[in-house]
Length: 456
Image 1 (cartoon, rainbow, N blue to C red):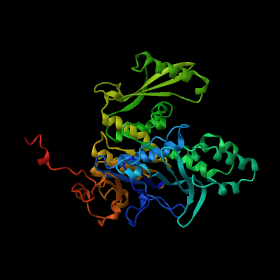
Image 2: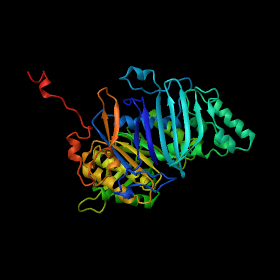
Image 3: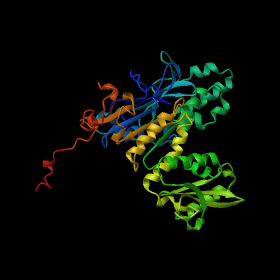
Image 4: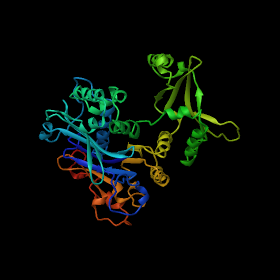
């Protein structure tokens, strides 16, 4: 679970800005909060509103950037590829900063790093509680020792383990995160009692999911449907619930020669699937627009299947099969989100989604959020959205502390604030005030009379 995220000097963010999932003082909708873990409870959802270019997407990009730095790392001798805030000359000199406060594996952690295009200046991991902090490790480029690993080293009894950990720390490139080295250098196999490091890496790898408007989530689930009747039933129940008009789904065998995919790419996939390296890979996925193909191995041969929808036909027993490219963008969007909903309700997932409402009717996006909140009792998952959909801006659906706004100041810097900061009654409908500009998160449209060309 995400407790808090802060960002500084990154894209449109200049001064440090904090996005918090900590509950405010309100007592309404208590089921929107999780049970306390070491004194800290968090909210299950939040929606960030704002005008175009206000910083909503940049906040999500910052969260995703940190995830990629941990999981993918940075190429040796290459600059760290990101953009500082460009509208203040001082920002070119200043470093950037990203920090996550999270809940995972029964503990609360604060993990972050200070960096620039050349190097990681600082990196830290703390276990945090309501009243105390434990420093697990700290890295500071300005210190002679560079790494403080005392907390971990004190737990290790074998000298060779201590030496190995020191070796990894000392060998961490200046432009690489220590957590990335822990993940990629087989430290787990050689050093015990590093559960805190592995827990944080696991959160980035398996819990945090960042989804941008053109992303598809867990396409592989569509391949699993043919082997799992319960999974198929759940998927089709969701299709019926959201009134898509689809009666079922299936995988249809097709000739791979007829797929509109470059032949060299198909050959490469065939080679990979037939190689020994791919023994644990069940299928390769190819998405072409709204069409999804699955290539799998059967009897040492490649089988190509296409994901199809089924529709009832009047005066006929057999359904008509549709290529998903023939379905509406909204229907395809719903099919993309069904695996997401299923994973949300399993628990231990944090979904951060940009423009979830794209191609969806306002009633559908409202119901998606309401469905998650109504079915997540006792489930620790989070759904965090950046949205323009003002129909979500109601206290009938969300708490005040779940509603956030992104605005830009006079110098183009993004700032974040919550509805919790305003004196708003719990029963007041706030959508009208938002559209009138009370919360400062709408476009500032100029004077039409100054449009000289069209006023001639």
